[in-house]
Image (cartoon, rainbow, N blue to C red; front, side, top):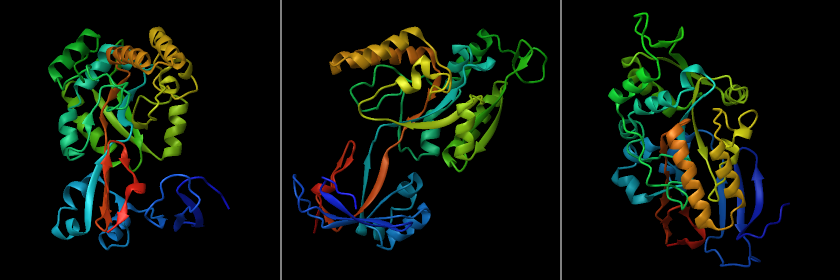
Length: 337
């Protein structure tokens, strides 16, 4: 029987069905207008979407295709209003620096230049998202907007690969260096339609410049084990972060062996900046340290940073005073019309 101090208190949990809350009459803050909330547990998002359209749900997250193509009817618009907001997150491809083909920063930059992020954003995500150039919250104080993402530039990518010594020496159509052919596998979670589509886009572009790539999709537990053992070439993943950001876990060199620094990034200056930022109480000074850190990441390109994706939701029109802020909606403001 948990007791909380929030505007709602726990009433019950029906395993696999719902979690129910009711208004907390002892709440110290503004009294919510809505008497109770029931969170329905629906594992299948397609089923949840159908229930939403039938009016069995008041609020539901939407997939990009649902937002763009399946909620445009007059009937849906008469029942629901759609809202978009951005939580701290980004998708990326991580290059395992321990692998010979990705140990050279010129190759990693070339790989980024072979990814047409604008086309992927439009074709796969229906334009819902923004291209990012670093690991910080795109709309936060720490993000360095002066860093321009590397452009889609296959010609320059070829030049960088040549400069790094990856050329086709035996005429088989695949670049090689020191007897090692440029073949690798892109790891991603099973069931991720985005990662699969991204991989198909990338494989086509890479084949044009003499690089062979295979797609690997595994269940999350298997994939996590491979990442933990550093047994992968490249991985397509995403991070959700906090507003008070700390890149230590993902980027400090001490985390390259057993932490979340799966790609093996190591840079003494980056380490120092991360450590200094942890000790810095002045948020403006801390942001300056993080901007220098982002410039190092941009120069070294251990990740190809892809997009920050918005949260897309539909809310029943029976609620009033629903506002979408940058980071979400505040149900305490809502009323019932």
